[in-house]
Image 1 (tube, rainbow, N blue to C red):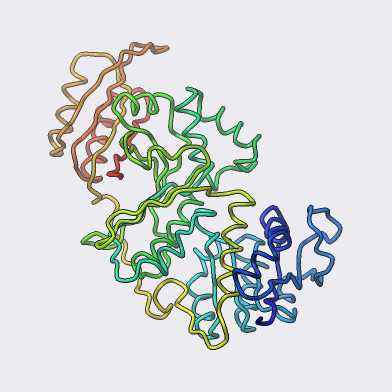
Image 2 (image 1 turned 120 degrees about the vertical axis):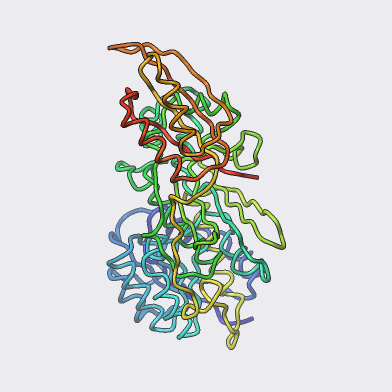
Length: 437
């Protein structure tokens, strides 16, 4: 049997403790699968006295994860600290430069420094594995990086944030407000005390930027993603979507266009009968459309200690199965130096169907003015629904428009015109309608 694979775990929070526990509880099974033992030789965390529910006393303790990465007697450095700078970046960089394999669950780090770290890993001939960084326990990175050789990806999209999916699911199922759902998500541990990173789309954007690089062979461009969150989704939107045969999901979408690569994160209406519309609660899902395979949908637990730990263990096992002299594949599918510069497609040229909800004064001429603005911008309407509502000051109506395929620019211009006409009593709501399998 080959020598044991020695690992060092930096960060012993929920995920780190779960990884240590699985490596202990599944030691015999992992040895049979990998052909060698996997041993936790070193650990690093803030508080050495804290009870984490797993005994790591046999491992050497390091207060400084960077020092552990540099001098510990380990083959693999596991980064579970979090954050795109500070100890996380410095320790991963140090481990790679020392010729150690790295496993990380840190999407923020990869979104900001992934290409630079990949260059170091490839130069040193070591692995930088990051399955747990995108969609938790779903093996989407391995699928895209290893199992789709020869396929050209046209579009990748999915539900990449469990917090948002949980909130939207409960809003629809129970008819309660966004704020009430968010408070429950925080109470249950699905949302942070400051939920901005999740609900405004930043978490989804980081994950999408990594998938975009894998899908299209471009450098990671997390700062070039069009982004909207879900905090402005109301019960009126949820009900209208249901009446029209749609369900609202926060999607991350990347696709190839004639003008470049389009990356966007925003609430989206998907047909209720589509597979992705059936993904509920904290579950994640990723759809990949290719020229050979067609559409592949991967779905499963997207967060939590066990789901993330499962992905980390899978990455460790891949390293354990490799042998000296084995030529490792590129971190992002292509050698880091061959990744193309990201060419951003203009969001305002995006084409598709749109849901538009307008709250307007209930007076003569309003509907005609709305129709004229749509016609002036060559927007064809699939349906128009009007609902009378009681206003505190004056009578109002809700006008719901569903367009045929049109452009983002045309919709925005039409809605801006309606706003300038003075017919609206509230901010307009525009939600894209996405083709989904």
